[in-house]
Image (tube, rainbow, N blue to C red):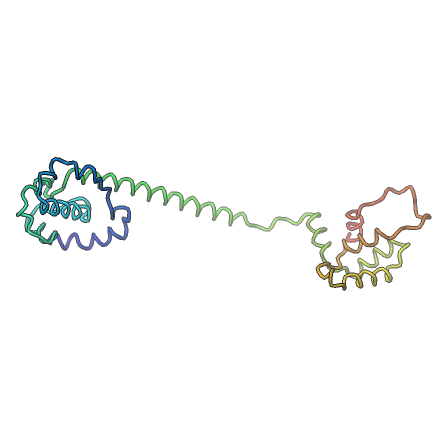
Length: 228
């Protein structure tokens, strides 16, 4: 199996799976100020940069074989011995040592980011599962029931109760007043609820003969009595 057939599929996978390794930091000041590159011709510097890019593209290493390397780079690298010297053989491959260390450092940083992202994802999934497990309907308390019933339409038993409690009020007359008031356009968002009825009836003055020593009851207390 040749270097090309081994590497080409991996290159595409690397592009998709290791997005952070599609680029590498380029320090123009070091390149332009390097004594090595300043002694090279323009053509040699172009070949040097081309091989650097291919080393990065091949995930840190180039083939040691000159013919294979030439096919990958697209030019005869044997014509540039000064450039090849910057890519010494390492365990059957070639690599610019400085770029190889940069590639390893970038790969390590990327792996750390992936690991952190996976931990964060697992943590979020775990929290969501815990929240879903805890999403059970809480037992209805007396206050919840009273609040729910307070928003319901008054039934016949409710009207019987308020008739018995508000003995000084003409309930049919007051009920007609309520319905008339609620039918006005400005009150279209109001509803005939038990709480509304009790608030209305509490504004009806009781006769002086009513029990004066009884402590006044709040609307909530009367509502609970009416709904009990």
